Structures are given as C-alpha cells and as structure tokens.
Amino acid sequence: MFIPVFGNGDIKTPEKAKLYKETYGVDGIMIGRASIGYPWIFNEIKHYLKTGEHLPAPTMQERLDAVKQHIDFAVKWKGELVGLLEMRSHYGNYFKGTANFRDYRSQLVRKGTLEEINEVLYNIEQEFLVQ
Image (cartoon, rainbow, N blue to C red; front, side):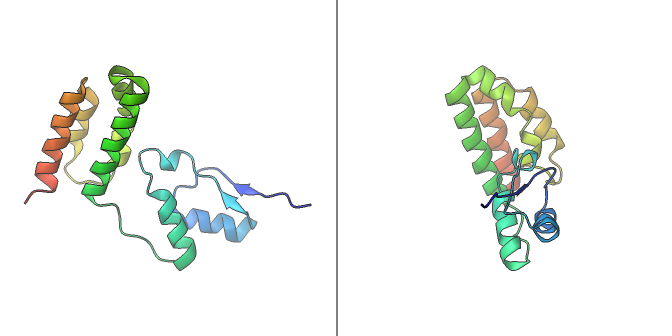
C-alpha cells in the first residue's frame, strides 16, 4: 500500500522545497502563503528541482499583468468594494523587492474604486515600463 507524503510548512523558496525532498523523501510539496501575491513560486520551484538553477525574477510587466488579472477575478467574484478591499493585502507581495515602490503601494491600499486603482497601475506602468 502506497501512502503519499507531502511536505508542508513555510516552504517559501526553491531551496527549501529541495531540502524537503532530499531530507524527508516527500512525494510532493504543498505551497501556501508563499504563493499569495507571488504565483511564480510554483514554476520557480519546479525549475529549480529539475535544473538546480533559479529562474529570473518576474518582470514588472509580468507583475502588473498578474495583479490586473487578480483584481479582475476579485471584482467579478466579490464585487468592487469587497474585491478591492481584499486585494490590499496582496499588492505588497506582487511588487516585493521593487525599488522606489513604497509610495505606489501606499496609494494602492488607500484607493477605493477600480478606476482609482487602474490609474495607479497606469502610473506604475509609465514609471517602470515606458522609457
């Protein structure tokens, strides 16, 4: 009889996933909080386990595309008010490590309408993508 064993608990990096696989011989890894606002963690771990190499960090365009898609899903599922309120806890993770981003994050968590959020995202695009 085969009983699969899964590793779980603060697996936030590809190295930690590899450590669980090598140390405990787990059949799989469960990712929780590390994926909140950072959906790239799954591909990063998969790639690292296969090659031993890190993928490049997500580009600003990839981050913006993901956050826009997340906002769209949140608003469609829960309505504009609740969807945008719940999104506030995710912005920091989507843009973690981005230099000079504090003011934009502050704006994102204070804005209350989709129109205002889209304006902030447009301004982020103008600063970080348009040269």
